[in-house]
Image (cartoon, rainbow, N blue to C red; front, side, top):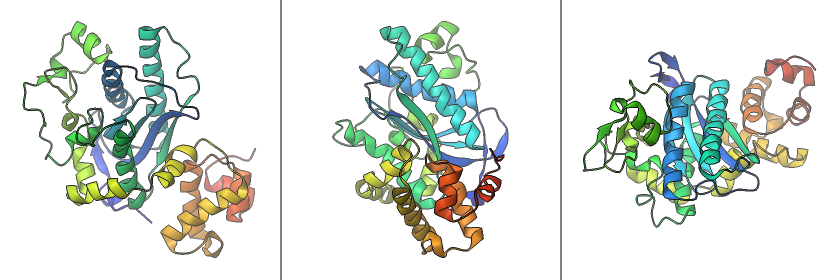
Length: 313
């Protein structure tokens, strides 16, 4: 069951190469959430760190949301390893920023960074809506009024939404780059633009075309889904599932829900080739192990390891 975006999956990566990419949801959130952004400058720094880390790890930023105690992004990466590298680099770089500013070296120790492959159109669209919907959970009156998501860069044809003067990040001096972007990385090739208050313009840092195409270029479609997104389901699929290993009965229920949505049948009724396809996604999007997968999918453990490309151990 391929996403329709896999029909034209090639994009230019930050390093200028053209490669086949896949969508991943990346989150930075602990089981016991901690305050990661205390003042506006922390939110601003987090957005910039996300952009710098995307460039460093060669992934494409699609959309993001930074709230007080967690961060969500959707990125396009060549594989799971690249998405994981981006998640880990965001955690590392923001940890350094937070430690320098507040002399607190422990705030992110209990925070998990994870990347979940968005295997289907359904999860891609709902994940995008879920990411933006987080603005409302941070006290915003509307998603339009919240400054720390990529939503303001969507459905505007890639044109910056700020009417004031804009400046190029690529033209910052070394001292300005360190002060404004919190990095010494080479940013001479980036297309990012800064507003008059030195915040990044979302349309210049996000792959807005990918989001608009996902929603058939209809903003009303996007807004309807934001209002109706099943937050509990997305929380389970994107946040809790990848972090907590659940009992077999709960895990089987999740697998059956996915199987029914994809193939209109429970896992027990699927042929082997469809089970194998589902196995790949479930193993990436949940904290589990080969033994549990073997029990739920009714495979031998050795077959699970073979399908996942792992050695027997």
